[in-house]
Length: 465
Ligand code: AMP
Ligand code: ZN
Image (cartoon, rainbow, N blue to C red):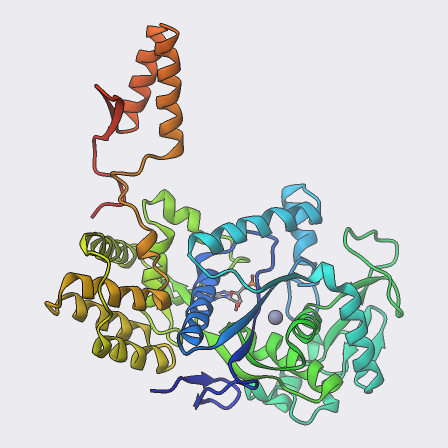
């Protein structure tokens, strides 16, 4: 079955064909790095990673671009409030630049822990100020820009189909929110460039033909996608919250300057919610990170598994029982997989069934069901392994890289053992005993054998079912 994807622009499932044969351009809105990513954000990146893997499974080379928003994202979508980076700087006492660096690194750590494929291009907004200024100048030349006391704005009234992606009903919006207009002509207008407030020294600001300041949030994605993928490319992704404002504005900008609606397919991941259906959000403060899961003995890859159990276009309500069930299922799969020998050939029928589900707008819950059917099929175990290898290229659970925690010795434990050996060599028996106790306390027993000391796990590690 050929790949079909649900396109938010047309509100329909469409057969996927690339603009240029064999190669697919894909742009995914990345994190605003003023705080850690929460597991809601990460659900969206897991969905995008699965999309990329399914495209690869269909034989396409994917050029995958992910941006890092490190300037210009204000606390309010109405172009008011503080820059989130500067706010983060006040919260922690670090510079906005240091915060951006720290949370970008943390984000990339989360990315790798979830076994997300490395993007072809990571691009930072602050590394592309010149491109953003040039893009705004193009929009200005096309006649869509007006100036107020605090910046340059995009004039949405000039575009008949502004907001089509979100099916926005502009007349209603305008009437309902007149109060929040400020100097804007229309409620849907948005900032392209904001001036630094007079007398205020911002940490992040640049000169521009219009005055010193910083770019609006939306322009970075239009400018960087144009640079790395061109102004008409295959797929643009993000979370569902981006439909009404951020993506509608990206489209408006590119349409004004280049006459395209930016991407042929618009895909949106639905939210992860918390109890009571509350959207998980960074500004909400009380959010769950990957580290929070680790502290509760769940692995990032168990969270990945949990994401696969829900279709990306349905809301997933997070709860700890579901995460524990995902961890148990993943552990079970690993233990089966590790016992299966290599050298088999994938079963064509099961692969075909899996592909049908994956190509049906990434129906991963059903694709997972095919996997568990396969496990029960009674096929030779080498065939099971080879078939699951094909599946895992899409699922991304890293099965072939997994080593049982009982056989793997963590680096800090190994370091304690090495120290103990040094203490013994120096005949420092007291230290050697203390180090043995420290290892004991961590659940590792030293057995001194003829080939030297060996570490044995005493208790079941947290990752075992
Ligand atoms: P941000 O760092 O806030 O710019 O968001 C990064 C990505 O996460 C965007 O694609 C958002 O649409 C997405 N996102 C934000 N909150 C959630 C949530 N609760 N569930 C799923 N995706 C989300
Ligand atoms: Zn974006």
